[in-house]
Image: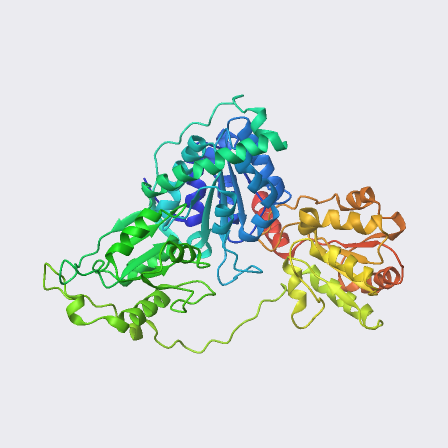
Length: 564
């Protein structure tokens, strides 16, 4: 059966068909649609697969390990910066090993379409000594899920699968199975001595996992997802090398393919399973005078290939042939190939050895037609958004203070940095607003304000508030509660209707805990409360609560449809 699927949807369906028992995730673009697809899938619902959102990526990873401990297959999904949050259990998961298969799906975001950095998650896989997969098409993304779960159980290791934004959010026709594999039965094969990482146990497991690396590289060498194509031309004389060889990985392999619609004139190596199969690299180096490495993200492969030998000239990101930052496109790859080939190529070299066919790359100029002038539209908070009223009130009060500082966080409200509000002075990572405000207060800053959203507060803000309470830090925390995880599309927020109780439980004094409704008509009350709490020298929390305008519209539409 064929289906038109996003890369994320292909991953989700592949996991379901591979016998998945649970997906654990925190919303993060470009990975969010994986969990949403599983939540809506008929078979997943029929089987009762776990698909509730987790509080953060660390809890997701740990819950998936718990499911694996009992022998069932679990998928963990996150964006690249979420892997930092779950780094502790992720790295240790190689030491514990797995019982049921575990696949950790990480969606990287080159060009930072919705992220703070361009982190390349393949480094985490190498660092943790965990096998890594990188699909080059939606079909591979689907097929890899069954392979990944089988391989995870075969090697008793979690498997990292890395995709990028373009793979996650582009569509293609995918051939899918007619039947899904049954879920693993519950079993008690987990050995406690592997999962209890006391030093003696951890040292033994570390020796075993280190020893496995040779086998993992051999498996990558023979992987159905790693390819070596000789190319359609041969050297003019048998004792000569090919002028160029190309190594490409992930979706960048597709971009290279688009540059050669009539076939490859050069040897081409595709890398979709790591550790890097060095034997294939050496094979290419023996046959090619020069090598070009095309990969999305950081020069991960390029660094390792340069470590294999220095006898072959290499082109890639490190020498500027390809851009070091931002995501690749077919046009960028084509332009870079033209640049490399023009340095050494003659028509004689491009002649096929066996035929008289000539090989030419497409004309770059045709691929860079000037576009019409389009006025850029900067992002902005939605009309009717409660965050607007929060910033309006906050800015009004802060005019009364000299050098106030507002520490922001990750969410829609980060747009408060932009005009017309220009209300925040920092945004580093999820949960950092409260701890940074505390650190600034420790340094003597007053007033120090933290603005954090409801989902971000439960994700990683609660511990910072506990630190502040324990030291009675001189900060005011604003938890802007719009009753959802709005920035990623309106998923459930873990702390909805619990924030007052959480704050009380963490030790916030009742008289300095306030709930307000951010509406223009309530502006006098909101500004009064903000002013009073800024002048209170201790921890105070203000919770402006009003539903996200987008989810409000959605819920109203659903309710109207139900009443028809």
